[in-house]
Image (cartoon, rainbow, N blue to C red):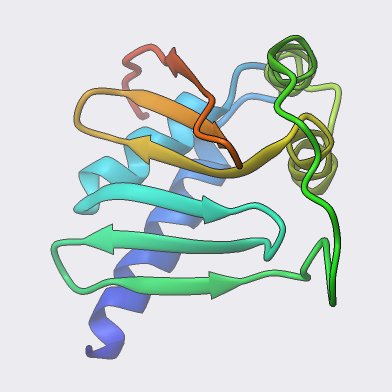
Length: 139
């Protein structure tokens, strides 16, 4: 992989962050990523690690892990996940707070598909919840 993939991803993230409003901002980031050739964003929640699948090469972004050592995975709680999503969509949480709320709701990974504009959240036992996000135009 060349640094070209990383440069494209970083530029898309910066463009998406600049365009996104405080509330309802995720579709702007996702659209910027899609336009930059990102097809999927996969987040391993307890590891706080993203895998971006892009036409320029695949890129991993490692954040601060939520869990180290041994830990029990929380049970999937769709109502808690939806509450976390709505709080994030309303601009009431930071991204780290959202990731923690996902973990607390039993989400072990999620996948954003930028082509069909969906985000699917998965629990340890195969439970899942899929949410569509709207199409937006970037300035």
